[in-house]
Length: 413
Image (cartoon, rainbow, N blue to C red; front, side, top):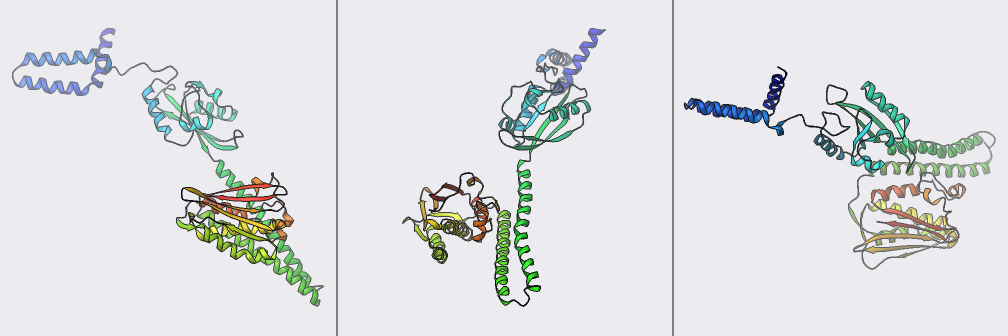
């Protein structure tokens, strides 16, 4: 009876996997019976059933790899790998015994390659992530935590683990561990908070000055004409400073809104630089600086926005005149054109910038010398605006400086 039961179960499994063969045989046998060929019909019917019964290639119960759930075959893992490789999120697929069955290409790029069936604890060192995964394996409930890594660079992830239930038993389960990178969002949040703090500080100082002078003019200096002239002049300077600061803040906001849209206007840099030099000539004369411009004979064309590029070179040349006025000369050199990339360098012969300040000079409100910057009516936003404009133009700002020998700002398209 046990053998008979086994045969019938095997026959049932074969029939389920070879339905189309059985159906075709039934149709052919019916045709033979209708034609009066009963013996051939019976022989065909039993031949097909015996073939199905003893055909091992149709056996749906094939052995599966070690450490893989019984319902997950190699072809299934290969399909999962193909699907997960299309995602830019690092993903690990984990078995109930905490072995890593596979990882996608994003995970390999972020964390390095690991051999299959490696224990999760050998790959993930964070106790928080390991505890979270073990809790999900026990309870079946999805969990997530925020995880930070310091090396090779500071990164922040939302790490989530969830059950992929592909069967009715505990062994027929997979657990998907994913890493969502929120490092950029955290940096933007930090920059925004720093920006608000710095902006409020920059506005607080001139506002406090205005309030103090107004109270003085309304009180002790009510009838002092000389004090009126002096204080009103200072108040005008402070109001002008706040106006410049607000204008720069609005300019930064506009640039951030369209930073992802590359400009497409064809700009010849030689006449643009000539216009900037002519516009800044009065300022250069006031501080005793000569601006020299060297351009090639051939046109040097770039894709850009004329007004924004004008603002970039006005900022760079004006800074060179103000902070490098001790050298008495500012050199602007345009090169490139044709197959060579366009490049503009602005060189001054002033005191230079200490090396520790160079990486940070494009940060908002960052100043190498606070007093010198304020005395020259700087808002601390000029180079931040330059960086944002060049980012939109897919260009780079390179800075080279040596104490006592001056600074070179190079814009490379």
